[in-house]
Each structure stands twice: as C-alpha cells, then as structure tokens.
Length: 236
Image 1 (cartoon, helix red, strand yellow):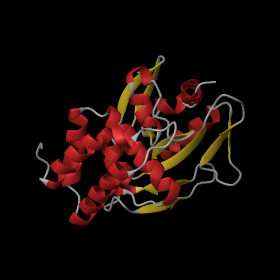
Image 2: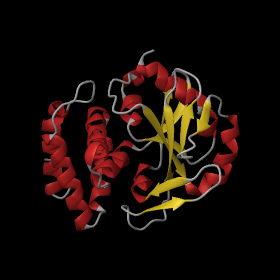
Image 3: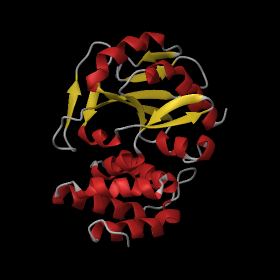
Image 4: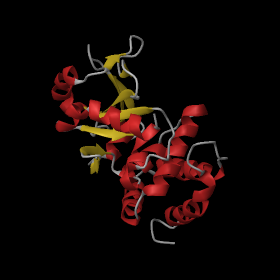
C-alpha cells in the first residue's frame, strides 16, 4: 500500500475529531497534505500528529469513542496505535495559546488522553482547511508551523526530522504564508530570533536522505529567507 493511501485512510479514521473545534494536523504530514492533490511525496515520518487545543480537550475526548481501528499505546497513552493494517500511528500533542514563552512545555494529565503541551504550537493556529479525497481536514497554519519547527530546540534524529519538515514546508508554502512566518518571527525576542536563524542555517547545510525532502533543492530559498530575517523582515 502506498504511503498516501495509508495517510488518507488514517485521516478518515480520525475524521470524527475534525468535527470539533481545536483539532488540527500538525507536524510532518502537513507538507504532504499541502502538496497539489495531497500528493504526499514529502515523507518524513510514518505517523500523524494531531494538535489538541487544551481549551477544547473535554469535547474532543468524548469523540475518541468514535475512532475505529486504533488503541492507546500501553506505554504512552497519547500515542494511538492502529489495530488494523493500512493506517499510520496517531500522536496527540497539546496546544495552549496562553503560554507566554513559545519554548515552554508542560504535561496535561488525563486518564484517557494525556498530552504534552508545547507553547510553540500556538503559532499553528488558526488552522488552514483543505479537502483531501472529499475529506475536510484542518492543518497547521504553514507559516506558524515553519516557525514552530525552527524555534523548537531538538537534537539527534528528532531534530533532523524537524528540519526535514521545514524543508518540506519550504516546498509548499506560498509567498503570503512566508510573509506570515516573517511577521511572527518579528514578534519574537532577540534570543528566540537567533535560534530561528541558526536552525534555518542548519537546514541549508543538511545532507539529503533517501526518500525524504531534499535540503539541497531549497538552499536558494533558505538563503533568500535568511536575508529577509537579517534585514528585519523586508523582501530581499
């Protein structure tokens, strides 16, 4: 089964959650869904990350009983594992717009759907809605997700995957969405701005990996974006 088929099947299975406010696709699958016809060629991971706005947690939790083909992982209840073939793992993460520092995080305790809440995910709101194979899907605001991935300090394989998501987003973001990214960047502290520029520079230096978005193809776009950030947001 092709990756796109697994991705669409997973999104259909979690479709009842999209009927509630405060649920959106975040993370590595967003570039795949933003490609024309959700082509899903920018594969970084084999999981779907769903962002849950903690303000709507109670309503969203009630809809979990409608999900068919998944079960919470015994080791990590915020990870739901497919119980039938042809679907991807689903990871739930929390969004809290009240966090003052976008690098803050905290655990949201719950008996059924505990979450690790990341302040930077606030940038992914409001969602961008799209239609994939007849299914209406909310995804992260692309400019906000780009900022979140560049702002979050991660190391090792996870850090590399985050930078590959950035590469994928640069393949799909529009000029207006990059303007949104720059506007959000200008609202950060100088320390956080320095982190974003540093991680964006690392993106341009990454080697390519088989079957994943090619950083080399985006180096010119990264260089132009860095020029804009260094110039205070104006077009280079």
